[in-house]
Image 1: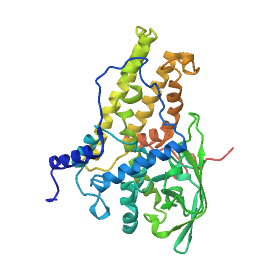
Image 2: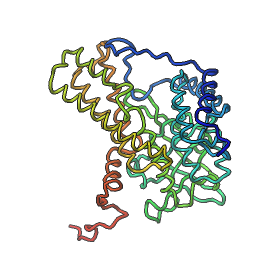
Image 3: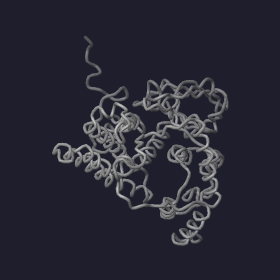
Image 4: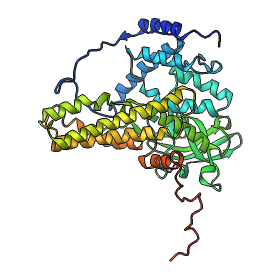
Length: 421
């Protein structure tokens, strides 16, 4: 568009906004020193509900200020509250914003990274107009309600049902492992609407009000001690038909839109992109030195393998995200980015366990020892989020490598007609 500001002009506009609303981050080029600073290694932040409410209020205030200044949905369609600028403008803003001290905004990650793109792709125009701008402004937080107790890895086997009642649908069933359900305002849910069709073809997606009668959210206590996940029960929840996503019984395409965006969001994280954050190379090297194990050839080799795994993931992840930045849709190869993340985190946890031994499991008040237990206990959750490792391997084998599909209830098996003993 001819009236779009250049990236340079836009960057100056963004810098002026950030200078007026936030403080520059003070960066110290200081090498990692064993025993200094906070040794918290939790993969999932564990905060009490009251502290969380304060963080959400701060995050919403920041999102509102950012949106009102024109930086809340930089690439979004103008007709739905976006600014209609390019990916280059968005990258320029993200680069600038990373230099400032800002409130924690991860509460919006699922809503903006997974639910909003699905609404934009599949909802009716008036539903897009109703929800997208408030989501990007921070007025509404979104949740994704897919997994069930009997349908986690095999999402198409879900049993939560939606039955048509005039211009409404009545939803009954249960979802599980729903991140942030307790503070979310709306949700994207996939339900079974025709039990007589093959499992992938009898599903339909909806946008629901998480505060409506018929929705009950219960926290799930995980082994890290926190309760970031939830169970959600539906008991006669009524949803207008105009809040349906896509066609009736076309919910599998809706789910794939969300899942591909989810794996893009998770796989592009710092864990898959390099050894930054918690499990950085300097921390692991200094841990070896502190315990006089830096000359152990097996541990040195293992650390080199861990480092190499992160570097390969970084390059592969960058290749995949460059396709997204170029305007191409996230593809099945992003399953590899997410799988690399969890495998690398597991490798770090196993390496730390070999170095620390019993000190990882016993709280002796020694810096950098028992704190690793939180990291270790958090890894299984990462292996489930965004698709289990097993499901991702199946996707990669079939959709990326082109290997034959495994026989299933929706496929023809050469063994199906054999006589039973």
